[in-house]
Image (cartoon, rainbow, N blue to C red):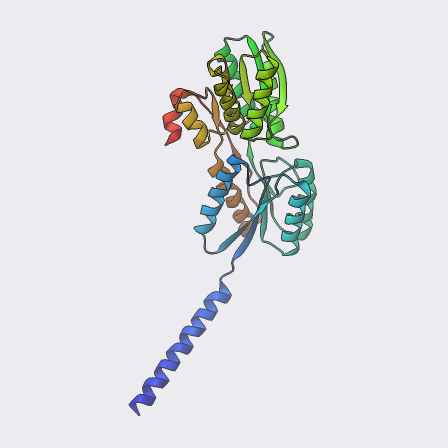
Length: 307
């Protein structure tokens, strides 16, 4: 009799636990957010992704799916359209090409899915997480011209054509150059955010005898590539070299006296705030845009940012 009573009690407890567990699992929704970026191989983007993964891991009620567009507009569109079909709760996009993502934003709107535009101020998005990249380009070029003493020749290593950040950073550079008639822009070449491309272009410039006083790169990786080429040729000390992003590698180069100027572009904040916007849109239906300002980093500041 005692054994029978024990069996009945155990079964009753198991039944209650199962019911509680079932109620908990059926009552707690896991939100799905798609986060598409231009390219996993972009060094700075890798820091954005690190922040996205950490944000995701800290939230058991959210699953973030990453999309690597591999600099292919069609792949980015296909990834996002798949997420729309699968009825994701929100979608964040750092674009390969801004104009193409307007279509995606409209498709999300039709499907009733919040769309967060990352670094793309398109009005079609539900909300935007932005950087003031024109101001970044202006601040960077002003710092270069200050180091040049208001006169000299500069060459620019541009980011990936079609991306808003690349276009706006160059726009900012040119806004400042227009104020200084004694500073000549000699050449602009596309380095696609890549270290190896920055190095190859700089090697070609050196071999061609290009005469400039400063190399202004639209990101740190291209700047580091240029520095490596200049060092290999034994002429690094003849140039001012500026980048943007303040990546760990760039700050190390600056600490070693190899990079003159960079801008702190907060990859962690961009990733986190984009996802915070997505969650606010999911839960509240509306959210204000977030604008992140990049900050000038000179050698005197490097220890602060290395921390």
